[in-house]
Amino acid sequence: MGEEGVSDDIGALKQRIKKLSAQAIERKMRLHDLAEDLPVGWDRILETAADAYEAYRTLAEARAALASAGGGGG
Image (tube, rainbow, N blue to C red; front, top):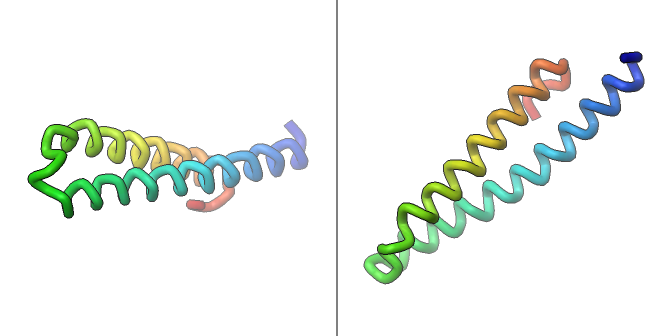
């Protein structure tokens, strides 16, 4: 792959990271809001926490991919 292709891949990864970061922040806020309202909604703790965990895990993987592609940590 040429230098331009690598640059395109890095740009796409950066865009993906931006989207994933927004999703992770949104899920973090859901978890935060749920915690503030406890004990109301206690039955949604595991589901909400799992959603936040998955969002941040996916974001970390994308950042690692960007770093290994030479695009920095994002």
